[in-house]
Structure formats: structure tokens, C-alpha cells
Length: 77
Image: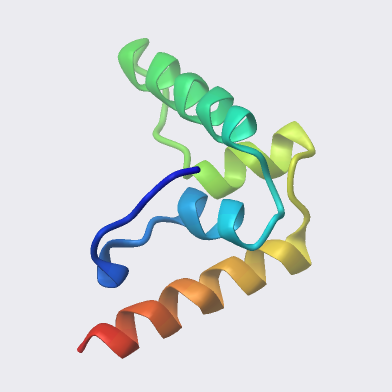
């Protein structure tokens, strides 16, 4: 499991895994895709967009993850 020490630093992929929406393997695949695209000079895409286009996560789940990130950030301040 992905471990985050500081709740305010939770990233999209971490929250998506914690919610049970994606697996670690799906996140790694998305990150690898993001890195390959960045290195090849393509426009940067967010992990959530890549996961959505992979079919690993849907729009309602993305909303839940983003809300979870906001709550974690608010709780840390």
C-alpha cells in the first residue's frame, strides 16, 4: 500500500487507492505513462485524466477523490 506521512501531501493517486477505486499497479502504469509523455515533449496530463482515459476510474470517482484531497488539505491547516 502507498503510505503518506503527512495528510496535507496526499496526492490524487494515493487517495484513489485509499478509496479502493484503483490499484497500485494501475497508478504505477499511469505514472509511467505520464513520465514517458513528459520526456517525449508531449503536453503534461494529470494522473486523474490518464486513469480516466485508461478506464481505471470514472467521473464520479474522480469527484470523490478530489473532495477527499480538499478535506485532507483543510484538516491539515
